[in-house]
Image (cartoon, rainbow, N blue to C red):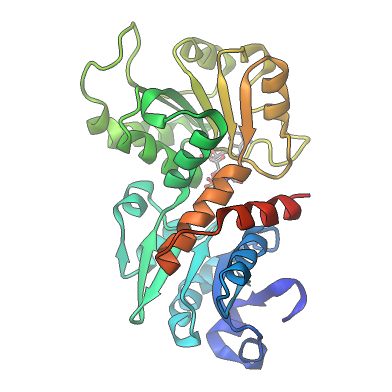
Length: 311
Ligand code: NAP
């Protein structure tokens, strides 16, 4: 295995000795740019070992120009599937032969199954979040009034599509570039017709990301999901000002760079319930395993490996 279990797009496209000499053979991969930070190999390799599967999960660094050729080379190299991460999820949707409904609604693919030489695309981010919320807060998305920060990004869009599919009580889409939130709201509007919510507010809203606008909307919100990149660095400003946090809110921060992100820290200090994105990472990975192997994932093995990798 080469250093860090990482391979270049050329290693895959040209299929040289470096891949052929791997033991166990490479069967799965995460493709991204950058990809070195990905924690998926640690917990997927633990799952493969626990299940006695003769294969390993590697990282592939591929630029946007190399992405499609790299993905298309995987069947010929004996791969069973792949995960797709930043910035390739939308390109993967266009590149696969067939995409499932979640992927189409999310506007991106994070999991690819290779079967009979064909590429089948899935999105497990939204369904992974549903499982994570049940585990962290014992709640179902469909019962909640939800605010998504960063609704215009890949993760935010996948989560918004999941909220629409679950017909959640209320959805507030917040994005720095508000035009993206407005366009997404128009796409999702058919799922929010009807008078399910009682009160003086709309069920589906696109909002500016300003303290004043958020304060107004938060009065009618149960769960805030940070799906933006804000918080990936400890020096980032808070995704939500501490003055807006209160004990009846639930905060789910999809960022998993630190065990306690600044948002999670401040939410807990305010008496709110809060969790970071490790549980979503775990469950989207477990769902990918279920797609590849058509059997339940060894979840506790994966969780232990992920927590060890996260330190
Ligand atoms: P992305 O497609 O690049 O989207 C980034 C989002 O963050 C956009 O909405 C962008 O707004 C917003 N943003 C970036 N910088 C900002 C700033 N300074 N102020 C306000 N908004 C800002 O990235 P992504 O793939 O969706 O990932 C976003 C986050 O989700 C990351 O933290 C990632 O780790 C997390 N994530 C977690 C999981 C998990 O399993 N836990 C899975 C996927 C992603 P604009 O539209 O205005 O640019």
